[in-house]
Amino acid sequence: MIKVILSIEDDSVTQMLNKIELEDGQVCERLDEAWNGEVAIKYFEALSKEKDGLLNVPEIILLDLNMPVMDGWEFLEIFQNRYPEFAAKTKIFILSSSINPSDREKAKNESNVVDFLSKPLDEFELKILKKLSLG
Image 1 (cartoon, rainbow, N blue to C red):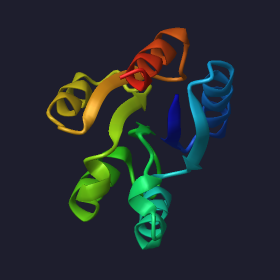
Image 2: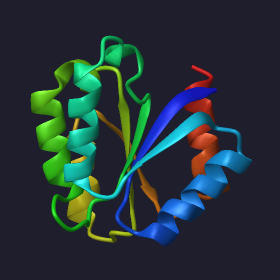
Image 3: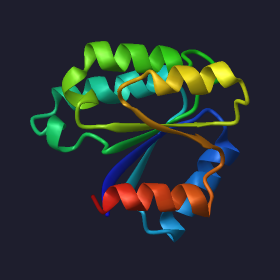
């Protein structure tokens, strides 16, 4: 089972649906939520100050692309540059409603991005996450 998943998503309905799917599917022990990229950066800033921060880093990030304040692409760039030790231990899944082919293409070129999934999570996406948790 995945220890921690961080969901970076500005839409409260999508956050709630993802939480229900992850809990019902028993995919993770804990789901942390950030409402935009800036909040997520603050999350990692706090984690970097913890004695055992590297041990508590989320194994998976579910990242929305289109958010106010700081979008998913901005978050990804800052996260990888400012917290490379966390980025090395985290698998990122773009979880977006974007139908823009350039978003999918850009995601393929990001080393930390494992896959591009459609939101909200459903049984198919949960299977992908569960497979990852089994090694």
